Image (cartoon, rainbow, N blue to C red):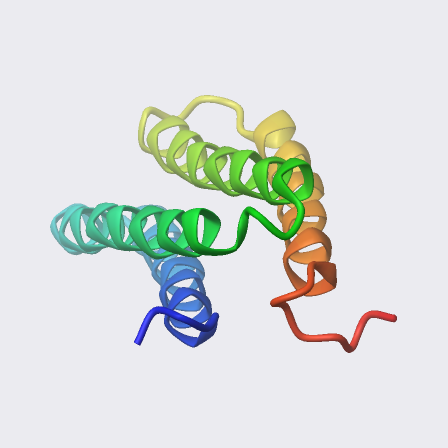
Length: 123
């Protein structure tokens, strides 16, 4: 079940969708709904890290350095998602966080899809 990337891709796609839903609910002044979606998103973070960790330990022997960089970038994406949501809730500036989030997300997607067990449509 965890010998390919399908489960991992499903978890991070759901995570990104839930991130934008939680953000929309926060901006729409639906605090209770935003809190519920944020908690579900935090569960998705755990699943993303679990499935990514499983893939990392299973396939890091192919190229440990690149898989390590991809793992670190994935953790940073999750961190920036959480920082954006928390800072938005506290009504603080999130401009820098958005810029860093987009850069790190694109780098993570590039690494993930260009590594040997990723899809090869970027080459």
